[in-house]
Length: 208
Image (tube, rainbow, N blue to C red):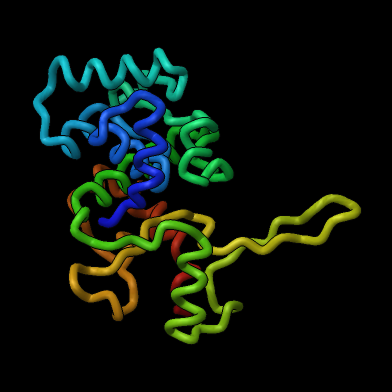
């Protein structure tokens, strides 16, 4: 996975090591939520002083909150507009508080991303729309979309790929259609209900 080095450096400037900054970039982009287990998986460190210090730093700087979720242990929520703003993603919904079902899905998807760091991901809505419309010549109206009604004096807004599920290229296959975890059977999924929810949310992909 190629990360924008300038934006990683912007997170480092907030007081994080390079490894921590790279991890936070991935969390902000693909999940918004994580556990220290995810950080250990990414960094290759062992549970102990390093992961504890990282969690304490996030809380001390006011960049994340932590809650004890049933069955999931302590889950951190990276919510700081300062962090997201440094990587030009301060409008992502990952900053907001969500339901427990949503959080569990994001944790599963973060597992998926961390287990596929050798792949290149389409990170943003614009990246995904550009790829399908310009490279694959798929009509925009065939893409999974949701219409948000505006106020009395505004027009409705059409947003694409609102589920924010990762889309990626297998290693060394940049010209092929991107893959998505929704199309795979993955051991990262801890419960059938989560997989059912993922499949339900991605039915709009059938047209592409």
